[in-house]
Amino acid sequence: MTPPSGTPSPSAPSSLEERVRAGDREALAELLAGQRAELRRYVEYRLDPRLRGRLSASDVLQEIYLSAQQRLEHFRELVDMPFRVWVRLLASQRLVDVHRKHMSAQARDAGIERSLDQPFRGAGAAVGSSASAVNLAARIVDDQTSPSQVALRRELLDQLVEAIGAMDPLDREVLALRHFDELTNDEVARLLDIPKGTASKRYIRALGRLRAMLERVPGLIDPSHESP
Image (cartoon, rainbow, N blue to C red; front, top):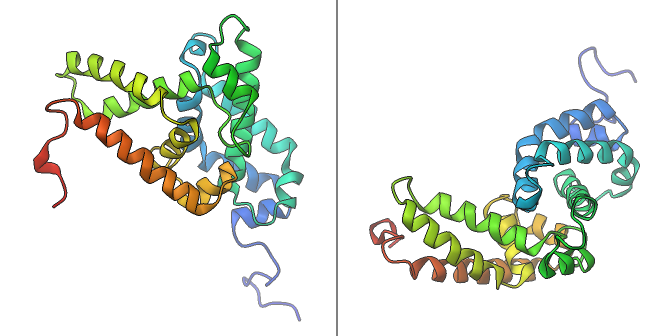
């Protein structure tokens, strides 16, 4: 029976993600456009600061979009994989590629070399250790300090880079994905290919360690803003 005029067929894809799974490339472009701000933040956090003069987040985003177009069939085969997670897997793979391409062996430090050659389980966290420590520390300092606290900001940044760099790399990545990329615990677990319980425990542990770091800086955290 033909459905009434103006009523979609029950089998017709209703959401953008369903349309992408049906092979609609216009829907793919629309989904990517909607993810642009989040993906830019994801890339900027993980892009080594030493590459900023010759490679921008926009350059990497273009490569991610191209990869998504080329690998659409791969996404269609992953029937249980949310698009938001899948596109970040692509982003992580592209970041590994650009670091290998643009950084000579002499320029890579030991932390970056290890993380590129030995990524976490799954493709979701292949990122330079030094880059993530520096960028995560800078983001935290920006959130915690005001422009008038220039001296404190410099001191805190140095302390946080050292402390965050000493974190377990997987804990650091879980912290970033939950706290700054605003992914759910389920999404983090899928992206990093770890059990949900592990993702949750690592986030709580990393958050506690981060808070302990911040509390060691006098006057940084205002007790009056604490929850009762």
